[in-house]
Length: 301
Image (cartoon, rainbow, N blue to C red):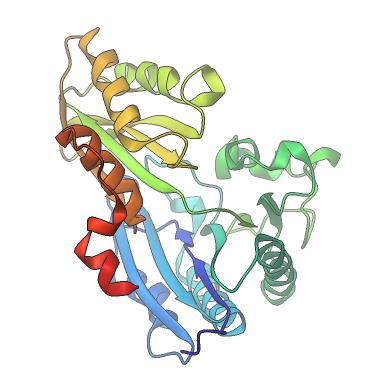
């Protein structure tokens, strides 16, 4: 690819994490397409969710995501969907992230154009969020998604929750979708050795910014029934200002109040190298360390 080509990242989240044939139908549009590269896709049975990470030239990427949303609408019925992760639609959220030769302003315009096209093609109500939001109360995805699919049919009738694009009613089986432009985030989960969801919820309250916790951190408690444990599930919206290790240590400290231990953590999707280097630097107590000492970073220069 030419150095002057515009490259975007898109990380659409779909409400299917259990049935492999449906997952493949949704992911296939990202394969073998000129100008698009499928980087990663991950599923979670407890969350019942699929997270796809793809990069590409804006128009080619938009076409692939549009096709994937069409596949999700065909194979996901939200009236039958059950999962631990909050959700409001078959194609739940579609963020665009500027990567190369694309400004945030351009990414916002691309997201709006995409939202308009998709809403017209599939008769799908779409809310704009994050940097693309049409009102301050719509910037935070959790505000839009509050009530989830089950309450969205009534919520969407209120004037303040009229969709930015598409019909003023939910799609009967696919619900609604949020589309926007944002900076890279880190989806980071911490597992606890208890099955008491109340504890995870209480710790999440202490961690997330909206209830007095860490800036640039969103968090909820989730039960992982197959593992018989609970999880504090988070989105770190700016890891350069609130580091992963800071969140991890706060969770570990709060867990001690309940006699609970951290038994593991996970990152969903891709993560910027700098976010991991920052954490390694903290735990290894490295002095005067810089990214210039990372082999892969030097190779990519």
